[in-house]
Image (cartoon, rainbow, N blue to C red):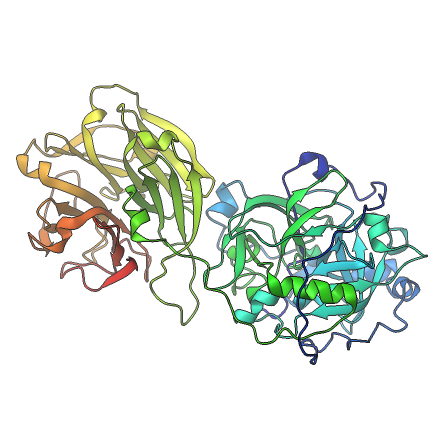
Length: 627
């Protein structure tokens, strides 16, 4: 467990005019505050956090002057990193190993430094370790006009909020002042840095002290708080990473899309650069030119806001979580505005968010392809639907005790109904470059043949035309799959079953495009009965194998295919078996070892299931996902 992930993150939305606002922008008085969603008060109880003041407690003599006396420029410069992780000499971060893959290296969701906005800032704290800024926070609208929002694990009895922090200035010269915390408000059932259901409650409010007769909201404005509308939202995230990974001490922002965190009432994002120091920052659904907007989440949740991996793991700075804002959140918001410390009672977690959906929906799945599109090491699933829409179902790490029936954890919409994907007639995932994540091959209705080097939740990228439309050949490519059938380590060899029953192999598409054709089978009526094919490794010999599902329900594995043809044939399902109703068959590494020997099936009735570790002895246990 990382007991102090402190992912001080602040969210924003994709409005360039707002992101251009610097920390020196003029303060603007906020308009009338909006009323919060009312909550219900429960019986009083003890605070959940040991460092949270009692209901009537304040920070005592902890004032602006006290904070300025303590935080001399020398102490700010020498303050230790708050995450508790050892930093190498010189304060430079250790290089992540292994190198990031997927979204962190090749894709669009990477954070960028910018000057910041006035309503979001850092939390500084004083403790025995003389720590510097440790979390992010934001000003929110309230009746007392002195309320800020952060994560529940960011509470500290001697905290100071510095909105629009300017690293070029001392604390005394900060453009929007510094605001000592007077009183904390945390859900009493929250447990700090928890990996349990109560991590859904990782949010907190703090009332700050007025400064020179001014209120916080009058100086920087107040953000509005809104119930999280669902698990999939477009947000822009901003935060202050720890100095070790952010020597300029500037905030970063990232425009990204959220998805559900399986098993929790939380959202997740995948954006590189969110190091320790981003906890507590808001996720904005809207943001206006005044530097305030609409907040639907904050960095926090499971394990303090990120996966339980060491800092050397690329997932550490890519994946961040946020609790969903519902009744418990707005009850706490109401309590904070009215100075109450009520107990909402035991936490009842809502139904875990992610589901593949029902059989009725999956009857509409027309094409499927697997591939390690997001760099997780396991196969994601790309689906083209009858209405022309396309979705990506991504793999995700499961926790101990989770059901094995969850090989996918998030769904992203790639394209809406009626998109260009309605013209796709055959698709296959493959690896076309030595680094990064998998891509996709597509045979279109008009015979055009396309390679996309990479695929992620934003779509298919780096398009390369391998065959022009109406070429007179590729219109007849009935089935395609990409595997490792030559000495090249990549899965970029294309096997094609043609309409006349012939079978061909094209080697090394990644570097050669469609090169020389190796005919593995001449036109043969038997191969016109092949209904689905999938490349994998089923024999344990690390050879490129092929699974074929035949029209009569038989399923066959051909092991060790190469340019000289087919070799050993193994029957894994008999003729007239239930596989006669298997309308889509996809081979991937969905479970266990990272070997493509799992077979996912979409049945005629819309049910979806998969078979783990298929080998020469059969398909083994069926695990039902839908139906």
